[in-house]
Amino acid sequence: MAEQLQGHPQRRLIEHAVISLLEVARAENEADAWRLVSGCLADISEALEVFRPRRTARKITVFGSARTQVQDPCYVLAEQVARLAVEAGFEVMTGGGGGVMEGANSGAGREHSIGLNVDLPFEQHANRFVSASEGRLLFFRYFFTRKLFFLRESDALLVLPGGFGTLDELFECLTLIQTGRTPPIPLVLLAPAGDDFWCQWKQSIHQVLAERQLISPEDGDLIVEASCAEDAVAHISRFYRVFHSARPGEDRTELLLNAPIPRELLPQLNQDFADMLDEGAIQAGESVDDNGLMVPCLRLRLDKRRVGRLYQFIDHLNGLDLPASPALDRPATRIPQGVVCP
Image (cartoon, rainbow, N blue to C red):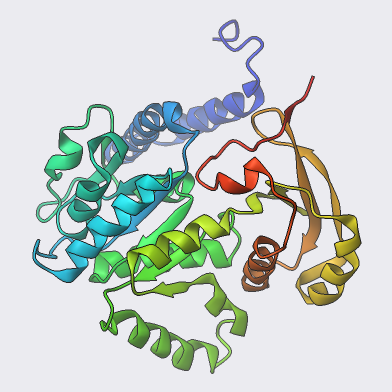
């Protein structure tokens, strides 16, 4: 095994993983425990294999009820938003089941759909649009490994009305975004025009949580509400106009950008957004991304309790009037338009 790992760029992490597995082996004899370990590793291995060749295009995950009927306006809206997402260059990811998920996979088409299904006794049979897509349908053994890959691979979350499962996914995503456990991505609540499902939900969240100071006032900016497919896709595309991705660290956060921010704008940015910093100032520079590309970035020491304020900052950056650049017109591309480092 040591010979196989020779020269592997992640050798140290692999060794740590093997050591952890050996520690479990020394202490655990129960079959249930090993079924859990084996199932988790199988879920992760299979998911990595599916997503490995699909890293370049951004993916929009669509959540919603499996019980929604074909004639329901939410089903029609899921088809519309998925079709527009593909036209904008995104791929569409769902839970792979019926209802809203089927509508989204129908709109995206087999070649641009990915289904992350889970073994359930009812409701969760794979829909025909992902079941016929070779290499684009996963069956997870556990909900938590499925949720892991929804967030790991998603560049945007689009949530239509649904029940316990949909709301569970929504709250899970909100929690991980608010606590900084996942990098910033757009989260859009979508319902047909005239449907007040999300309006009532947001109002109750504000009254129950924000007014009792259980969440920060700006946490409401983690979510955007839309009543048509065009607005939903436009918001997601705009989120990646200037901002490309975030790289959170222990002491500072790097915001990778599609275009550099003129240094003369930094004093105003620091004045307007000083309250989101733990200390220091927002600084402009360059960084090397995961693909070895040199890209412009901003560095800052973020107050981890002010993630909602970070979303406001990203929105401000995306609204800046910057010189025209091809990179500003490719929001659905995961690879920054940078320069390969020697």
